[in-house]
Length: 251
Image 1: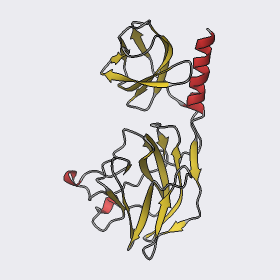
Image 2: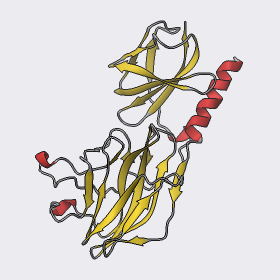
Image 3: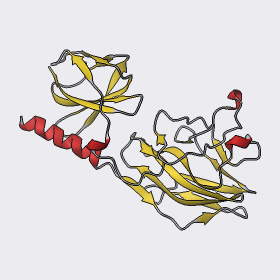
Image 4: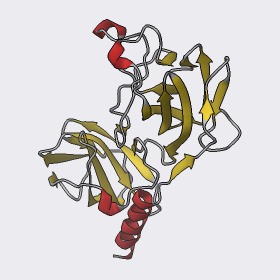
């Protein structure tokens, strides 16, 4: 019982105290070929740099480490590597359209008319790696008569965790919309079968020390073969960004 209560406490800590780190910088106006470095975690290392390019803004990057929420591919009728303007509270996560090929642009001359950023505030969605871990963040952009500014930026400092455009505080357990599911067998040996009306996109187990273990998921079948024997909280994520949890025992 004490072990189970510890797991629940650690799960609450994981969900509640993942931190949204906000960099509220002095408004930066792009002009005359200047540039702005982004250092999301203030460690002195630049994740990427935005450059002024005569009324548009460009960024060049290694797409294995960095990418930006885009409008779509050239083959599907969109401008080449155009960054999409996001509205407040748009989810930014592994399901977002990160399709840049190493460069991306705000208000590029070749963008379709409906792909330019509107006047006023909107957001850029980004993903990047710090070390080997992947993170998601937003950049607040203001456009006024073609002049582009960056006003602030932020990221969720828990690896692989979603952030909403403009979000400045972390979600608590009460902020997550759960969903109904059942599983068997429990205790488990090599596999667990999930039954749910939701489409499960990710599964992980949290042990008594708070360590998170990613589990292989094949449709409704979760592979627990390599999971050491013990008590865990199984956390399931759905394609609608809902999270549900249940205690499991691995024999």
